[in-house]
Amino acid sequence: MTEPSMTPSPGVMRSIRVLSILERETDEDHYLTARTIAEEARHPSDPAIAAVDATIPTVRAAIRTLRALGYDISSDHQEGYALIGREFSRHELNLIMRVVAQSPLLDAQQRIGLLEHLLVLCTPSQREEHAMRLRRLAQKTSRIETTTITFIATSAETVVRAALAGKTSVSFELSSSQAAPDGSRRRLIPSSLRNRDGIWFVDGADRPTPTQHGGRRTLRLDRLCNLTTRTPAGTVYIAVDTTSEAPTKTNPSPFSHQESSPQSADGNEG
Image (cartoon, rainbow, N blue to C red; front, side, top):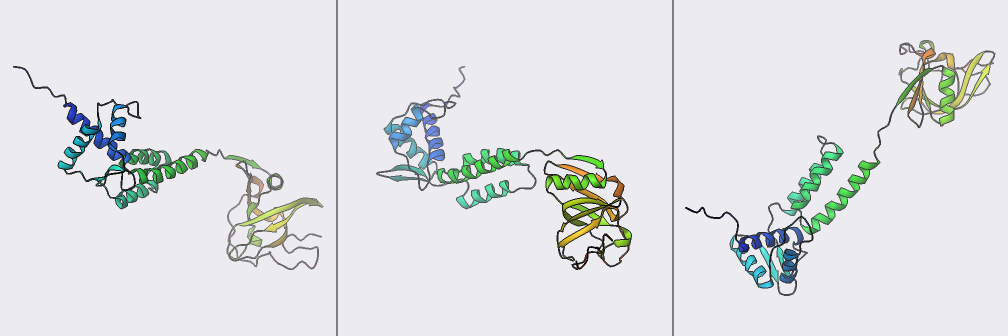
């Protein structure tokens, strides 16, 4: 007994191909004529898709078959045909694409890969919009470079010199005897480093904090704790000769806006 052939008939293959073309290329704003659909079926723009014999009458017959199966296909005497009904509405698909693009559970490459797969569900108008967003996301991802951070343990003078060379700030805490009331770390943008009578001083402008105004400062390096800086290249300098426990005393802060004499409250210079 000869088993029945499981190969779909040419008419079924043609209807499937017409549906695929309508899904990919048409929506409320994009119509295709029967001639264009037949041409795409015979000569697919995608080389991976096999050609299917089709003519204008057979395309129209396939569309009648698809309508009988429940597909919402609109027709226009001048513009042709368009598939209107979709598995997801435009709003639903936009929401799905947005959730995937912003998902914290996926890394950038996973988001891009999933969005590329979802593009096949989009109408032509949606595909143009989301493809543009996808290109921007891919460009942004390609610009993300892995940064290697190098840590260097050195002296306080070297930390300040590195900050001067890189035009970056130094971060520090005050020694226990000079601790600020909030015990927070301070930042200073150094402008010069000098030695007077064997004592190192750093001049600069400190960055303002919620509890402290900014201003020009002169600080003694031996009164700074946990002094660090990070250069633009990613190298972190740590002054090992200033590492200590965080300050705990709450003496008045030496940061003052009074500069009436060369002697500084925090530097005791002179």
